[in-house]
Image (cartoon, rainbow, N blue to C red; front, side, top):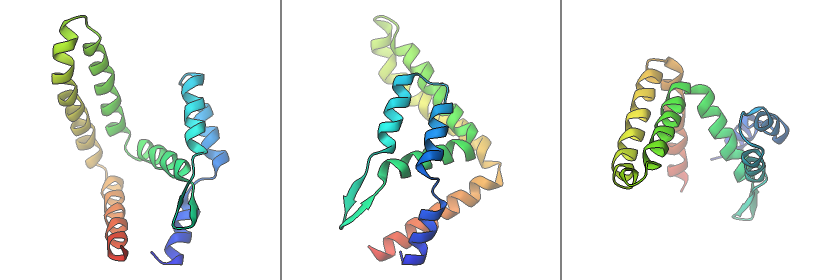
Length: 139
């Protein structure tokens, strides 16, 4: 990507303070919030440049949940049901590995179908496709 494209990507990312505020408003335990705050501070060096990897990951996750609520809800419900099935003594050992991938695929598909009816999803997938197409051309 050229410098103009890089500056657009950096401008569209929310600042760390905004991400911290969103983490603080989540209805999760203090331990989970601490882990997310640690992820927010994670940075890596690539080609002599320091990237805020954690900030990019959390911004992406919050963006996905905001833009595709049905898909996120379907995945969360599938993971909760999978965990409940796997926690059944003896029977969970057999059914957990078999049903977990199926439930996850079903939850993802059902949520995605509900979100696909929305035009913003099509626009976001198109933008992601263009981003990866331009990234692969420069690699």
